[in-house]
Length: 232
Length: 203
Image (cartoon, rainbow over all chains, first blue to last red; front, side):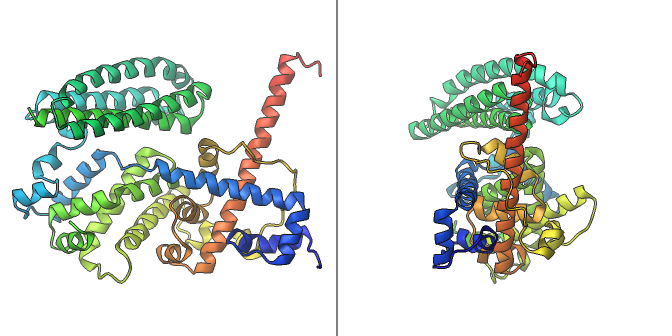
């Protein structure tokens, strides 16, 4: 069989990655370390990218809160669903208003919700002061601040977690188990992110992930306190 | 509430239906935005903007394409618009790839040092490389390799041909490979420099 050159194989590479494997291209790949290496590289990129989809998560609750407020301002939505039907969908006007960080800032809400929102806001503000928002102009401070600021934050999140646990223990056991399971996932995620930031304190992407991980935990603790409070 | 029912009610302005549609699709849209811009705050803004556009236009949705495809098309356009504004020009989607490659076929710098990426790809360095891709490549790469869309769906989302989608994806992967190799070489240089400093430059 006539073999092809590396340059000729280049024209086969795109269809190859789509699964087309003509015999002459296969023969070339079997004998050419360079081209088989290129294929391996591309397959590794593909495989790593695929693994990202497992880490997909919902947008933070504040996105919906803000979007809903905008839809109301524009007069695009109206409340028509009877309360009973709304509850069946797991959606009530009150729930929508209470969801998210900023809902907790309304004075009519009870203490646990305020505590959760306060915590979330604390994480956001602490990171805004020392973190990604102004990191470009204040790199040295961030590098120092990462080590300093995350420990108290971590401690406060742990403290809030104890508080939330006491509330969530009063809710439905199935819901409580699910919340605890989610919390364990977020804690693992935080541990991984903290490890990355410790290893590479100047890595902006790692810092963004850590920031996000803390936000997720704060969001989750807010939900836990709300759930617990709702069954009181 | 099934999606079709939620769409029908949302077209009448029903708040719960809007929320249902948001809950069904926000994860994929947010992930797409996050991978495209690599920044959570911007990704949140873009997610909100994409859904806002969706809800403003939902009365015109007639079901010619899948609802998720329609939403993704809106989201991709919102992100590309943002990236265009950032880069300060109003170029077309085609121009958001690397023009020399588009006109000249596949890149010919196929050779080069035989470094292997084996073991050196992780989420952080791949994300860093993805951020350096031209927006057109980035969109197709994220839609196909990360989110698992097929080329025919991407063609619909991006308003391009299936062949174009395949070609953009291949170029994106090849460009990523180059970027990862560059990063690997830079790291090797740094390591050598550090080792040399440790031995006091005796080597």
